[in-house]
Length: 378
Picture 1: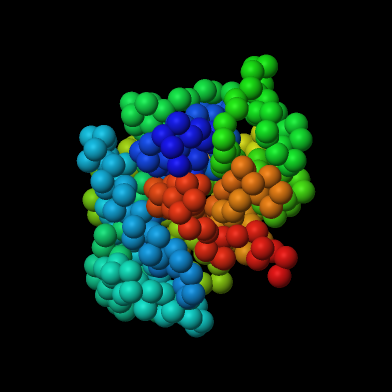
Picture 2 (picture 1 turned 60 degrees about the vertical axis):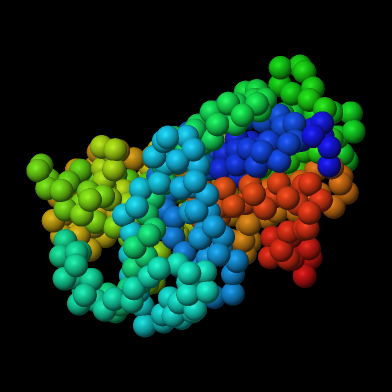
């Protein structure tokens, strides 16, 4: 592939931004487009923070991907002189009698050389006494994990992309017969066109609307409420210095991030919410969701029982039917690549997915069957 080869990447979130940067670093001319800008409030990559962890259950590619992604996050932090990753450790608490997910994660963590400890409930309580360990059977602790600054990271990737010679335009694409190919270029909302040799659509929850035949409802945006609670005055037990990122896997999956950057103690329920319009949807967190979050922290973090809500927000997941990423060439238009289906866990993988996809776009290999569209036909 010659250096003059031109790729247009649509979407400047975690997947698109890193893909654009990775292609650029391989000598490709890259034009990056986004309707509202990197990390905007409508995007799946927006908001304050995201978790990076390796515990993922059995038979999946994500533990190795997360290990490589963490390496790339750190390398680029050093390159740019910005802190994007906060190393707090990640505590994964097993509270169900069925701990197959956790047990089957351990061999893959070892294989990927992700450091971890197995802790009993009692050991969790001794190490972090601010956690009520009632019904915590055991836990996986990843000391090298932590959280990423989501919006800031997307904006920093764009700055790096521009500094290295990339082209960026804040503009929307028009869904005019994209499914049949883009030999005549891609029409944009400002009346212009961008013409490239290949196109990568990393459009998150909008991918189904742009590609109704190929994707359609295979990506389903859902409303996800996120709450931030204020710790008692002078109490630093719920700060990133004193508490790891945590996740609880029992009847459901609830996770949180210690207070960082003055935003409060983050709590969220991973259960898929109602379907949501990412463009026009009103981003107001539900009262029921707030009540469930309050009940939960009162039980698991007793000192936070009467903590005030200091902030809330609504993001969305863009879910695939099996929660695996979708990464593949369009089945008809061979100059189009489709990337999405982050399903609530994709952000951390941005750097490694960008690295992998850049190689595939350049003709070096092809996506794993786990990611390809053919799996839906089966």
